[in-house]
Image (tube, rainbow, N blue to C red; front, side):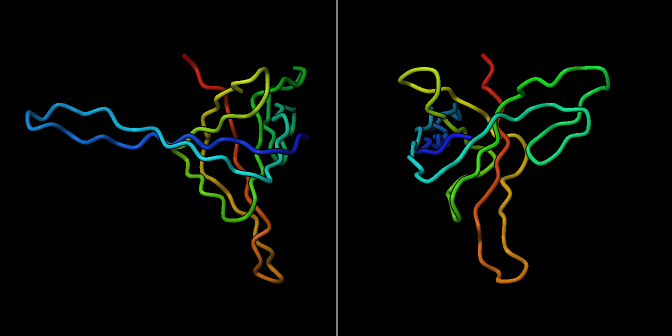
Length: 121
């Protein structure tokens, strides 16, 4: 597991010009502190942050699972840049919905969980 800040990348729509042609949007980047991430590995049975895989295969890293702090401004259409492999980091897409861990006993939000897969292309 690794702890540190990550960058949330959100592509904002640009709208349309008077002729109905799309106008390029802006990119909003925000650093989110207090995150933890770990490799997401495919295993035979699956588990928290893991994907099931066929029997007879060895586990392989499929991406990362990100645990942001409570209330982090992340939605499923965003992208996340992890500070790995060099200065610029690596950009990942979010798979599925952003989950939030809330204690059933106190109702206090403990943080979230986000599945990440490397951006293709």
